[in-house]
Amino acid sequence: MEKRLIGKIGLVTGAGSGIGRAIAVRFAKEGAIVGIHYYQNKDGAEETLETVFAAGGEGIMLQADVSVAREVDEMIATLVERYGTIDVLVNNSGIGSAYSPDRVHEIDGQDWDRVIEVNLKGYMLTAKAVLPYLIDKGKGSIINISSIRGLSGAPALASYCASKGGVVLLTKEMALDYACYGIRVNCICPGFIETEMFSRYLNRQENANLARNKFAKMALLGRIGFPEEIASVCAFLASDAASFVTGIALPVDGGYVANGVREM
Ligand code: NAP
Image (cartoon, rainbow, N blue to C red; front, top):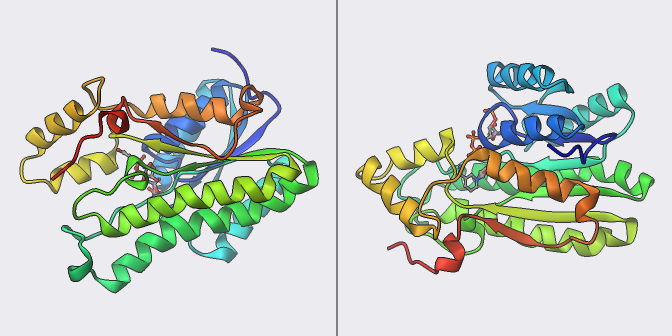
């Protein structure tokens, strides 16, 4: 494997499971030092850290609720105190609505607020805490994990679609504001990926197996993706190999968006 991230300090939020864990491990394998953030899943974060160590990497576990500014600021301060700086932020933490169907006329206001707070405000707060360091250095990379649900709507997912669509436009807006400081801001829009979040989503469908097959067929490649397939793209965007890439919202979805399917 190429070592494109040697000398870089990265932070991955939500790295105790799923896509975040795969990104943290990939970063370590490519030579980065990684901040492994978790919210509630301390055991999961420990497992990620052990995998990082086993790969010969270096990292630290950091706890925070990304929707709380004070906790985010403390997390970034701890990382910088330990390693002296930060070069790459991956905003990956995310939640779905606790309710299904999540349609506007039935929406629970508190649930809507929580999804927006974690998925959108959390990305802004974490970027806000990291940006002063990147501005000082005159370089850096921020990668936001959105979703195919941020590019087109999906039935009964109002709060999630709104939050992920917000992430796409926040990414583009930040790319404009920070290009002059040498900071690149990009966004990955995963399709259906084998994680606990995807399993929870399947279990809320009428028939989980049928739904899995349906979602697999919606991708041109005819299958569900793996967290490592998001991580490899994320490592590219974090690296200097992507030095002319900013402001993009890149579907990594096996061709789901290209397929133009309607989920009704
Ligand atoms: P996951 O394993 O459930 O990961 C979600 C992460 O979000 C967890 O690590 C969780 O931390 C963290 N989190 C939840 N609430 C938080 C809070 N208040 N503060 C900080 N962190 C919080 O699911 P995943 O599938 O890997 O999802 C990762 C990202 O990919 C999400 O943004 C998701 O929307 C996006 N995505 C996933 C898919 C898919 O098919 N899987 C598709 C498109 C986009 P703890 O576990 O430590 O509490």
